[in-house]
Image: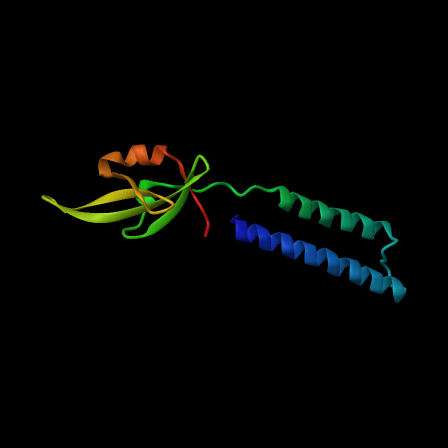
Length: 133
């Protein structure tokens, strides 16, 4: 579940709780079967609130950028040990034709290093966490 999906789920359950409370209050006023004084209402409301609280404490799993996931000429915003980096893969010409190279920049787009196909394992071992825009 992405952060956006989680946020939407929390908003939805909060709206559902408010609608449920309103409907039960309305039913109480019209002498319907369920009201805000009923045990069934209290139990249902508690379940809904527990779902909401679980969603709020749910942590979205981190997604890491791997060498093979990087698209040519696409910039990725990543985090390593709390520091933001930019990662880009480009094609360079060589004797065998073209070969991809991955460049890592700091957040000010200052060049830090580049890696080749031979450095795939090293790059993956960095565990660069993708930062959602």
